Image 1 (tube, one colour):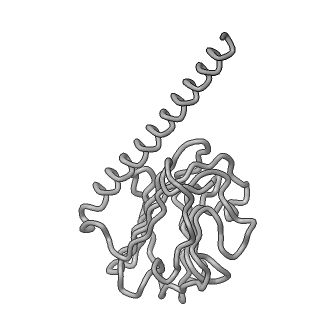
Image 2 (cartoon, rainbow, N blue to C red):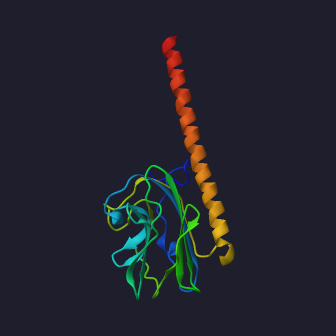
Image 3 (cartoon, helix red, strand yellow):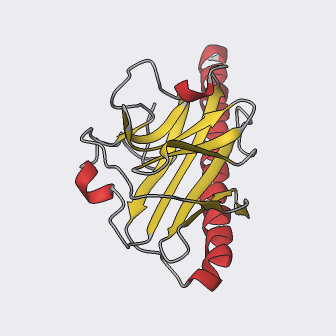
Length: 203
């Protein structure tokens, strides 16, 4: 199940050329997911992806290493950056990846918590595959068992670098609160429906 936000409709594939990192430009990715279960082989739990053989990028989640970013470059090849957070199932997890070209570093944020930056060597190698949510575009057995919300990529940082942590913390709080409110609404609606059925049976 793929949703644009916890209460919206299915997301269509993105055009990869609009989402791939460009030389010398910053890159900002946001996505939120709730895994019903995680495959023990972490590379099979794709959350947001434009990753093919030796190309592209991907966000996925490993049951032991947490959120992983795959980032393919001319110097490092297939790079995997793990943060150790976000491997819980049954709960919404908010993820941001920010790339600073001046420092040539990624920072992965999970639920507003910044993890250690990762240095990047070489130029990004784009994929010719379309960008998909909850599914790897090259291998159909790599997908998330669960829900995905708020997928998006910007080729710019939303605020200055020194304000980025504060911005991501507020964004995560807003997204997670919306997901919680939606879950409460579903629970409330389900309860009302059950009560109505009971009243009908009594009549």
